[in-house]
Image (cartoon, rainbow, N blue to C red; front, side, top):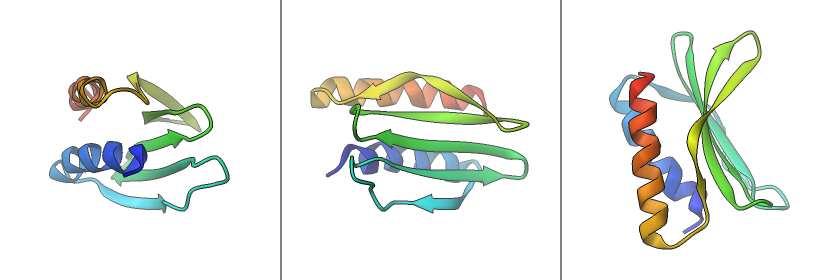
Length: 98
């Protein structure tokens, strides 16, 4: 399974439990395998993104006025254990912004 879908699945579970809906899906990968989608609730937004060329994913939080903040950690292609550990750490960070 493409890392984007694994990242998205876990993040989406958290976001939808907190009232967010997918408002801008973009699951067709580009030439390098990059994909993203946006989840929104009222004026709050989170973007889940995978950079296929660089081999990492991230979640960004909408700050308004065309500004996004990248939440850390970035999710890099790695072993299964490291990948899961990075996602768990990112879920904790996202939770602080809900």
